[in-house]
Image (tube, rainbow, N blue to C red; front, side, top):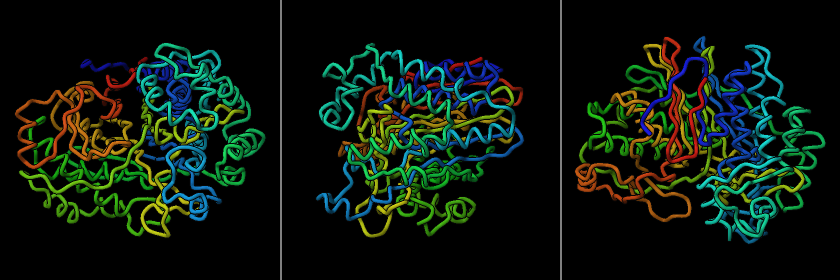
Length: 530
């Protein structure tokens, strides 16, 4: 798939075609890009539940036509009862990946929707929430066909997820994982979305719906309480940004790894690479990734606990020059370094007024903690599984603390007036895939869809695997791979198209209003245009 889709009145891209269609239908009905993204995200939570849920976290990056750029941090903190003693009493020296003790943070996604709707209302009268959730409700109540990727993941993870509270009732209703093409129904989730549409997003955190959520979490053994839900708030914050040749790049601030994504491109910009798909291109990005990840893994987490300011680094040309100068143009620096995993969805939309949204929503691992709340049908995230059981230091578990997030939606404003929103799922691979897509398009002249489709690489470990190699899809030239190996990269070949490399997407608005969009053939997604 190499053809870039184009339109003029609006565009949505998402990793599931039904969700992208739900979003573009909102644009057709007069909704904004913000409202289209809510419709898309809600539908993804129903039709792509292995990758996202309304029981997860979300981050928004909104680019306004007047040049303003805002972000929404909809990340929930650790429960008041989620302290070190809880895990030590339970005999754990690490937060479990699955089950009730993995469900230890508030789900912030719906608070992000609420904050986004507040911003949308400043630009016009939003559509009713009932309209935005219409398609998601229909698919929850009537069923959506299970995708190939969803069926494969459900089968692979069945043994570890089946015993978790509430999981099998929804995802294995006949005593086995659902097969590709079979209908997945979640009527309890449909009823929850109806209630949210009637009472508003705040009902997720306070009121009868919140009480049912809290009761089910308690019954499952999660430390998250009604008081934790009621105390949560999303916040509107300025983005991180950095200037490179021809463009200003934007991303999310902590607790996300947005600074790493910006650092990779800022450092690569200093290397002076002139040929795309060359050794210098791939090697340069991999080595810039190592520099960025070292900074990230030392400094980035809940901003309330950080001792450095990421924007200060991004504004410090001398410091960036020194980091770039530390990159050997011919040899690979030592690796490995700690890796972060995750399963996520990125989605983007641009409307006819030029409002552009880059949004990412996640439950961390596929199906999150595995807990499905029976009264509401919500699958709860396990983002807090990333916390360290330690008294202090990086990402140490503390009540109320936000966990480190791999999520980071991206955008670029080009000096010539183009505006691009882009991103991907894929945990550790998110900054790397963003860098691949952006440089291929913006530096080396690839079409947008070709830049997304082209073979990708991943430095580091994917969750559940011990390998920390430089993995590459088996579509690069043998000569390039040989040079990477000779330079000292520990290379590992993987399938030609694999979800290991993320589900990327991008939408670009040209100065004349023409929109261009791309979706990832590694996903079940599509570009929906109007």
